[in-house]
Image (cartoon, rainbow, N blue to C red; front, side):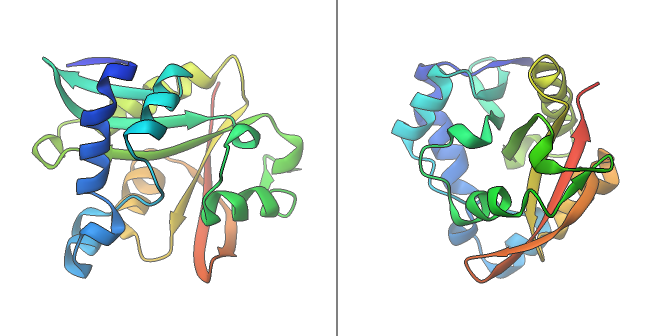
Length: 183
């Protein structure tokens, strides 16, 4: 497995992986068992993110096994409601005793792993790569997890040790902000 930055040529495969794991494409049971991703990430958006070096991928001999976005939050062109809510809540959320708004941080996620590769360390390797990639530009990586997305909580908080910063509401849904240090 090769872990690398995505290229613009990866965009169609990334869009397919994202669409297959989107909240709206899954049943309630699938969301409860495997988690889900949100937002609008079509081929054009993913191509632009790859060009800006905002996407990390797990590449298994040309097959995209997973992806992880790592973005400058203020640079997100059209933030989705959860991202906009996180940006609005950042002064009420604390990281290491300081308001998040006073901390250099990067937006971590979405992250998605192809069903055929789950349980094989792909998400952990992408997380490790993201933390290392962010270390020169930020003090923390920050993600949001929608209430009820138990699989994502288990991976990121229970598994990777990300720290809960607090909850916020956006678009009528509740989210938990979680963070990990980059050092």
